[in-house]
Image 1 (cartoon, protein in one colour):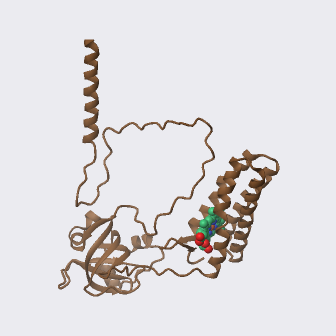
Image 2 (tube, helix red, strand yellow):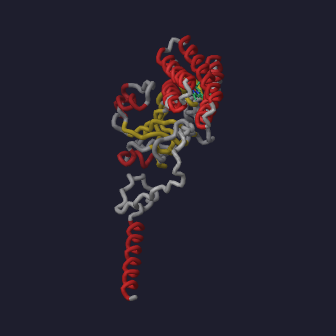
Length: 322
Ligand code: HEC
């Protein structure tokens, strides 16, 4: 009796110790500071194995299209900061994505200006802003909130970060701002709450409308095909694979007409996978047909990654320059 009591106490204090360790290893939130890389907890809790309630063979995972994040989503949390703090201590913010508030100091070019903290007087501590998509000039001396990544100005780094943007600063200004903090702005919000760096969303052109008609047939056919494969419904598999084959054939013809050999090949690959499904279904080999589903879906991703562009309103266009 006594023994069991002792062991219970020992177990209890062990559990308490583990609890305390896990509490103390929690990273503390540091208010008002730029986020520092999270420290690895000293006592990582063992991952709880996912109990498998269903021992039956897992069904072919349906690669549900993940909802794409809004365009221009920063890869890290935004750090709110005043232009004066950046000017005083740029090193703390290099590489961070900031929402920087300040007053417009100098309108430099159609896509650039500088900000500082004071509307009325030049403080001599300016932060450069490059906003490739700037639609109208900022209000001289108006307050703005600028969103984007902060780096130290270096034409070579700007070129790698802002593909397709040509720096339009004068050689003198480039020399002046070299090594100084610059925000590569994706948004510039003025005091009226208007983002003056927001690209207008053009209507779809005739090509895009034609391609859209083909594209919208693909996801439902893919979903129906997967279901038919799982249900071993040969007629339905054939029907849906034929829809996919036709849509890929039309996609191939579309890109061929535009003279884009790579996109034509992506579409041809998709068609080939749809044909493989039809062939295997002709042989009543559902397992073999299933092996084409994933590579068929990969052709969508390959082409979209290179030739599809998502607008701020969530609609799609053919990537500019194609
Ligand atoms: C060879 C290139 C290419 C391939 C292959 C391709 N797509 Fe697309 N897709 C595009 C482009 C470009 C757009 C945007 C322009 C448009 O819709 O006209 C688009 C748009 C879409 C859209 C948006 C349509 C809308 O509502 O506006 C969907 C959905 C879509 N594709 C699904 C698919 C699926 C699913 C596959 C594969 C089974 C696929 N696509 C294969 C190029 C391709």
